[in-house]
Image 1: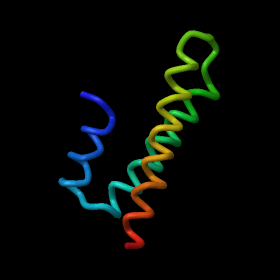
Image 2: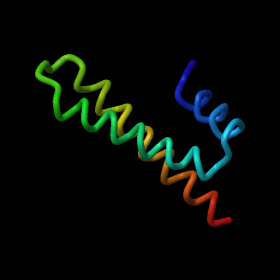
Image 3: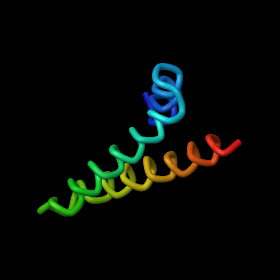
Image 4: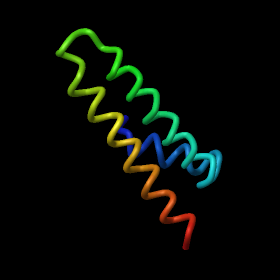
Length: 66
C-alpha cells in the first residue's frame, strides 16, 4: 500500500483537518528519525517519507481553504 492510498483512507476516516495534522506529525516523525540516523542506508527513505508527508500536509491545507 502506498502513501497516497493510506492518506486517502485517513481522510475518509477522520476528515481533512485531522488528516492534515497527521501529515504534519508523520513528517515530523520522519524528520526526527532522519536526524537521529547514524547509518547512511536508510537516509534516502527517511528523507523521502519526511518530504512526502510534508507535501501532503501542504496539499491538504490548500484543500481546507477551498
